[in-house]
Image 1 (cartoon, rainbow, N blue to C red):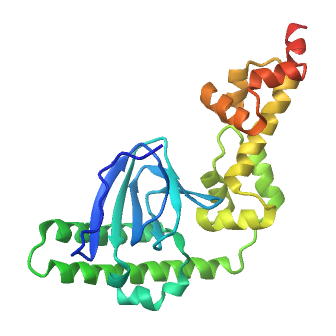
Image 2 (image 1 turned 135 degrees about the vertical axis):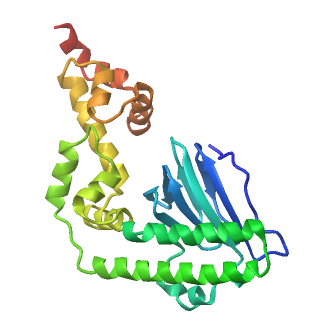
Image 3 (image 1 turned 180 degrees about the vertical axis):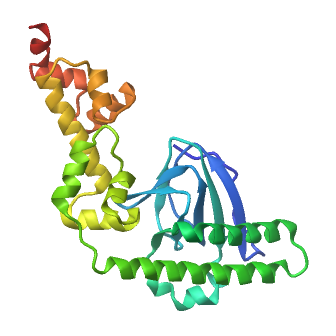
Length: 275
């Protein structure tokens, strides 16, 4: 679904664009010819890059190099602060340390640094909107400080992850025991690591995307319940974490090619319901 917000592009004679938007829609795969930063002020969305999905809420900063393909999905209202910068106008400190980031970087700001990062963003926004004397110099100075802090936070995250390991059996047991409420971010919180890093660690250990694994465990459990119990399809969906019957049907059919009702009938589940 295409996101409906007033898209801000950089004017030809400008170095950057600063904007803030709210949306309840996702946006399809796209890329930019400029550098982009997106910071979540409130709400949440899933930032999708290649085969990875990152849950982003307040304090999450996404950095996109030019031509980096990405999309995001959301089912609730999310407010995002966005900075678009021409590659030739990137702060010097970032140019010097660009190799520390990938084409797309998702950085979770530590709770004790969120207020400081947001204050810098709000100062940039005010200067950009007011355009008082020397506003461009103030913005560029703020961007230097902002990137310096992001480099420091990113280094700290990488340093702490060097010795990171996960107890696979404990993590998988946690998922199975909490199918009704489990989310990728709750699994990461249980593990003690930030979500972007844990997602990579999970895939390295399990060989599967975390969001995909959770969905499959929900559906595998639902499959068994459809055949072995007489519970209604709506209740089965609810018990494995699908709060809306229509969404449960849609996901089930996407994975298995049939609806839950068709699967139950084909596997003798209706016979058990009549007995």
